[in-house]
Image (cartoon, rainbow, N blue to C red; front, side, top):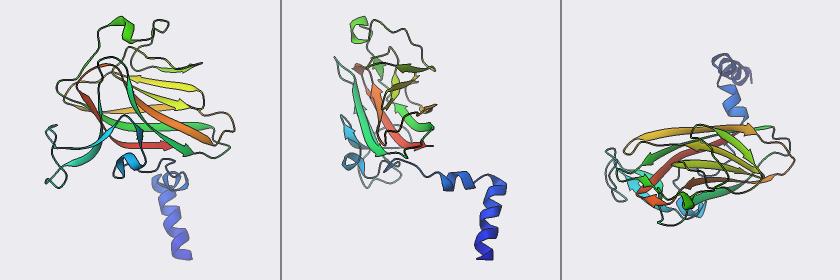
Length: 193
């Protein structure tokens, strides 16, 4: 018992105890269970270190979820999860990779006309919107948005943090891409109090 207590105190000293006490709320944050946990428009893919697609079993590939952009509407993957009733704040982190041919739509009608949000911002809104950005995270209940632009051929870490107020325990986390060409690959998604 003393060794366990000393071990915990050493974790507190280096700042790791909060990570243990606040476990990730998502299932399958490594994307290894694929579409059995993540729902929506995605498909399981295997990405090589150079950003090209490989196949299952290839040496050095990473399993990811691929969202191919549509010519006419946004696409998304989402996960329903259960949160504590007293959840006050939610911190989301996800890694995304834009394919080398990634290009979002240039048609103004493919985006919500009543919002003028910029990449890098966070918005709390009253409904579903399609912002003119490369990628966005939306949390529910409610409509909490975090917006990002991406560079083709590069991994980016997108982080969101918002007040999670309310007592709803059934929640949803969504990752969106706009209309356009190419694909976005997603890995390492976490949601923590």
